Image (cartoon, rainbow, N blue to C red):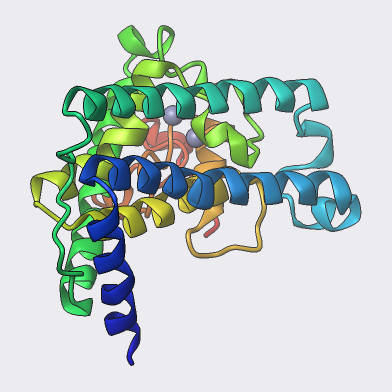
Length: 259
Ligand SMILES: [Zn+2]
Ligand SMILES: [Zn+2]
């Protein structure tokens, strides 16, 4: 039996056994644990258990790294953001009696081709939406009230990816990943797989480590260090708008970033 047929068989069993709302709720928690909490914890363990390796591979210097207390505070806020999003989803599903899911629970597992199209669409849609939401958050009239909090960590660690004001967490972290695929009417499994990838990407982007070139962690690390550069996730929108260079808004000081 091929992988797709095996997946179909497991999915058929799950759909036949549990209510759609329950599948969506448990699947969403799993995505957050597998995609973010687990990788962010592993990155944090590298920081503490392998200090020599960590020092060799951190993009920014050891003296700029956050203290243990700052990291603990970051983890608490990040977990709070996960919990309130889970509580919101639980409430919405509870009101529907768990008989109906919010996302598409098709009994047929998407084909590989559909999955690849969904993934590509999600990647581009997230890049475009995140870029503009993120640039708006840097507007002087909004920045101090909302996004300044995320920029507390000039030298980021993985958990800092979701160290954000609740408004930012909803509009910049949750919606750009889920809304485009929801509007496309993509299968729940496509959304789940895409979310896991994007959450891991966010953790890797903020990990401060140089050993993962895909996604390119240096781009967002530089955003935390210099602020007004690299607003997107994969570099496409920054390339289009010319915001991939430090000093793009001050032409006389333009310095091409090292990629
Ligand atoms: Zn960030
Ligand atoms: Zn920012």
